[in-house]
Image (cartoon, rainbow, N blue to C red; front, side):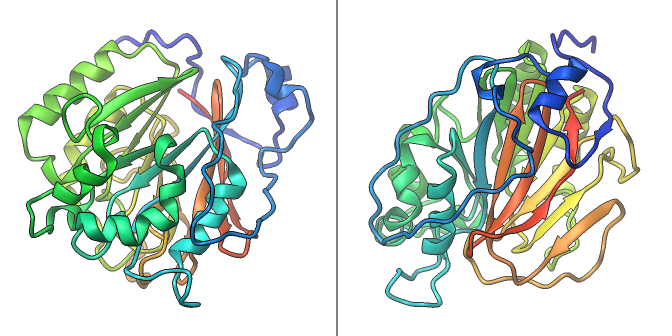
Amino acid sequence: MTSTKPYSVPRRLLPAAVTITALLASGLVTAGPAEAAETPLSQGRPAYPFTSAPTPTTTPTVPPGGTFVVAAAGDIAERCTASSSSCVHPKTAAQVRAMNPEYVLTMGDNQYSDGRLSDYQKYYDKTWGAFKSKTRPVPGNHETYDPAGAYAGYKGYFGSLATPQGKTYYSYDRGNWHFIALDSNNFNQPAQINWLKADLAANTRGCVAAYWHHPLFSSGEHGNAPVSRPVWKILYDARADLVLNGHDHHYERFAPQNPDAQADPNGMVEILGGMGGASPYRIQNVQPNSQKRLANTYGVLKLNLAPAAFSWQLIGTDGAVKDTGPTYACH
C-alpha cells in the first residue's frame, strides 16, 4: 500500500541520549509547547508514596502535536492487596501515578486468575483502578476463564472502555499517533483481521502502535505465539512502528524486525511488558533480535511519544530506571 503518513521518514535508530530539542533541530518533530525545555527522552520520573486507595489523577494537558507519555504493562493484579508486603500491583500502580500519563495501556491478564468481576473490584480496582478513566485495555487469556462467561468480568468492570467500538478490539488517535488495541484470543477469526486491514487502510497518522496479549516473539516460558504472525505481517506491510505485548511475565525488547524474525530497519519494535504484578517467569530460549531481557523485575513501561519518534524506559517498583530503550523515528 502507498503510505500517506504526513510525517513519514525512513526508519533509523537515533542516539540514545537524543533530546526533544535535538529532534526539533533535525526536522523530525514539529514543535509544540511541550518541547520548550531541553529534557532528555531517557530522563526518569521520581516515585511517590502510594496508598491502597489513591485519588484519581487529572489527565494532563498535551498540546496538539506535542510529546506525551503513555504507561503500559500486562499481567497485573494478583489476588492480594497493599496489606501484604509481597503484593506487587500496588507498587506498579504507584509508578503509573508518578508518571501521570495521557493513557494507561493494559496488555491483558489484567486480573488474576479468572478475570471475575468480583476480583476486579476487590483487587485491580484498589490500585490500577485509580487510572480507569484513562485506561485503554485489551484482554488476555485469563479474561476468558471467568466462570460467568468469557470476558464477563472484563466487560463488567471496564464497561464501554473494553468495547468502545462494540468489539474487544478498537483503535483511537492522539496527535500523530494511531493506537490499535487487539484481542489476541481471537486472531483466528476473520472479522478482526478484516477490521484491522480496513483500519490501517483508513489511517492517516504518521506513527502506529499496536498492542495485544500474546507476543509473536518471546524468550520466556510461553515462548513465541505463532497465532500473532498474520497480524504482525499486516502491521509490517502497513509500516507500523511499535508492538506491545504481555503473557510472558518478564521484560524484553527487540530490535526492529519483520514477521520472519529477520533484522529489518523497516521492521517493527516489539516490547514485552508482562511485569505488572503477576509472578515472574524465567528466560528460557533467547530469540533472534532480542536486545534486552529482565526477569524477576517488576515495573511499568513509560513510553515517550513524539510526533515522529518514540523512546521508552522501564520504571521499576522502586522508581528506578531499569532499562532505557533506543529512540526510533517513525516510518
